[in-house]
Structures are given as structure tokens and as C-alpha cells.
Image 1 (cartoon, helix red, strand yellow):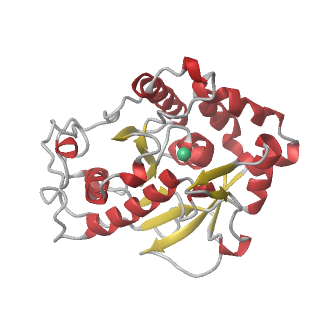
Image 2: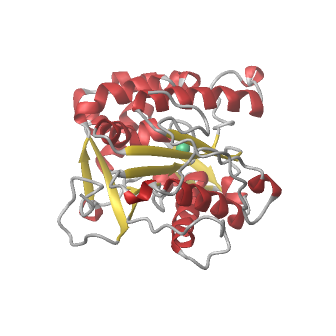
Image 3: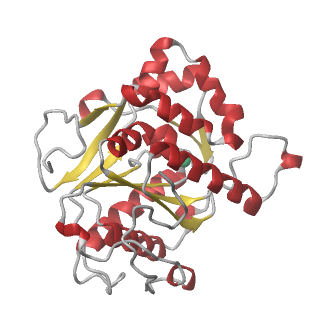
Amino acid sequence: MQVEKGTRISCDGDSARKVHAVGSEQAASETSEAYSNGEEHMTNQLKLMCVLAHPDDESLGNGGILAKYAAEGVETYLVTATRGERGWFGDEREYPGLEALGKRREAELLAAARVLGITRVDFLDYIDGDLDQAHPAEVIAKIVGHVRRVKPDVVVTFGPDGAYGHPDHIAICQFTTAAIVEAASASSLYYHDLASHAVSKLYYMAPTYQLGVAYQAVFGDVVMHVDGVERRGIGGPEWAITTRIDTKDYRQIVWEAVLCHQSQLVVYRQLEHASREHQKELWDCQTYYRAFSLVNGGRRVEGDLFEGLR
Ligand SMILES: [Zn+2]
């Protein structure tokens, strides 16, 4: 399977469509070719969309579910807000600059998406680290456009903790949640030329305390300093997890996807040295919080993001 930026692979050949985003010229000029001709939602093809902040959030944070659902025939979509332009671990004097590193990381993400079998990748074109300063209406409008064109059943994004307090992760959680409300509203001012679409289930990534321990064992203290305050990933309580997805059969695929992020491997290669027990925490299960569902409920832990939809 091949993935190109902004191009749907198993596409039904809709021609480029002028889009109208509220908020900025940049959003309005975004291309939107080849999504759907509007007939597709009449079928029962299941669709998963991940809306994330940086290249590698898909492989490290959600690689297991993306690989698993693609293998099961679910169409998987990825919207990434930035190109990770500030993710540089080398000598500062060798930093290639925002644009050059962004291009490199875009290519790495597209390679990882191919490995994970992702149908289509789109970028929101923000700069790494700046997302929570972006105009909310502009970001929300862009996500509404993607949601209305793709018409996903299930959307996955970061939780309110941003995994370890990363402001971009927290911002994409808030923007995505708002966009899902807007996308479902027929009276929304965003992309009013596209039919409204109600996402059936929204999930927040819910890393466990044990996963945090595994990361800490490999990387040491994972800490961010934001506004003079230390932020760490502590993981949520086990009882708050609504959904556990068994992803152990996809370990190898996920690792191959991680390896596509060449510019980040100085750091990620260390994951190979994790203990057997920590490897299990890292790859064998992914945990989520069901922020809302229009199709099921209750406190029994789900083993499938599409429970209630099949
Ligand atoms: Zn990230």
C-alpha cells in the first residue's frame, strides 16, 4: 500500500474541491483533492482517524491500533498538526532549520504510514511547539474539513494530560474535541459546503502508570519545563481506562514504523534495550479513555475501538 501526503490511495477519484475554512487565508488555500464523492458513507466500511501533533506520535503512541485496524480492513487516516520541526537531538550547530527538518520528518512520517498501512495522511501545517498559540477557529476549521470529508466512525487523539504535559498534545486534544462537535452540527459555520458528520466514538490516549515506568526505565526522567513548571507523564489510574486493545501481534510492524523516524533514532533506538517486561508494556497493549460514544456505554472494559459499530 502506498501513501502520499494529501492523496488518498484507494481513492474514488473525486476532483479537487475548493474548500472554505473560517479563520485564515492559509486554511482556505489548503488543498482537499480526492477524499470522497459522498456515496461512500452509504457502505459499512469502518474508518478510524487519528488526529495527532507530531510525526512519531502515530508510531510510538498509536502504532499498534493503526497497524491492527488496517490489517483488519478498517480504513485508517492520520491528521498530523506539525512536521516536528523542532525535534532535533544532534549538535545544535548542525540543526538544519525549521523547513529542512520539517521536510525530512514529513518524509519519515509518510514512510512510517506506509508501514502501518495508513490510507491517507494530511498535515495541518503548524510549526512544532506553536500549536497551542494558533488561532483556535483556524485549527478547528481545518480539522472539521478533514472529519467531514473522511467521515470517520472513530477518532483518536491525545488526552487532556498531553501524555506528559506537552502543550502541542494538549492543544490537539482540545481542538479535535471541538472540531468533532462542530463537524456534527448542521449549523456550523466551518466548511458549510460539506455535509455534517457525527463521529460515533471519540477516544483519548490514556497511557498507564506502568507504561510511564517503562519509558522512564529507557529514557530516564521524561520532563518538560513549561512556564517555569515541571511537567511529567504520570499515567492515569488503571480504573479510568475504558478500552484496552491487544496489539502484540503487530509489535514488529510498529517497530519498523518507529525505525522510519530516522532523525529521531538517536533516542528511539534505546527502546531496543528495554527489558522484556518493559517491552510488553511498550508494545503489547494500547490503552484509551472513551471520551464519548453514541453507540455503547457502561464500565466493562472494551477490547475494540469499534465496539457497538460492528
Ligand atoms: Zn508528539
